[in-house]
Image 1 (cartoon, rainbow, N blue to C red):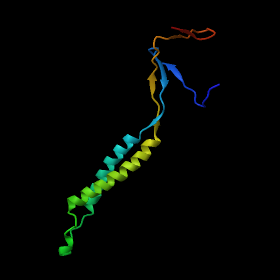
Image 2 (cartoon, rainbow, N blue to C red; image 1 turned 120 degrees about the vertical axis):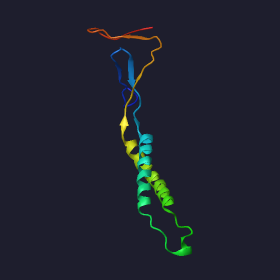
Image 3 (cartoon, rainbow, N blue to C red; image 1 turned 45 degrees about the vertical axis):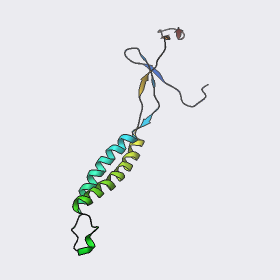
Image 4 (cartoon, rainbow, N blue to C red; image 1 turned 90 degrees about the horizontal axis):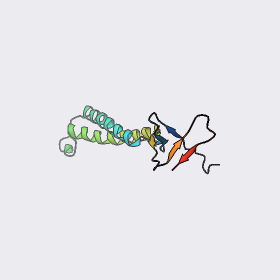
Length: 120
């Protein structure tokens, strides 16, 4: 019996190299990066397109110019896009096959044999 409910699968590829499945992993980092870039571009475009000049005289001292508003939109968009991308990327799971280092152990499986022969 196995101690855990997870069974490790081992397979041979075409070159007869022993491989096993590595732990599954998500793509949160990639998703966050793509989301940040898309969000920054979208935020910059929206920030620039929604800018209006200030007409209040001295009340416009701290009013942003069009470039500053576009930069602010890019920052907000990048943060939001990174968060959405992180969630989506983390939900996409992949598995990777990695070679098993046998350290001189030889495994032979013969057709019709009653078992597996392990030699050192």
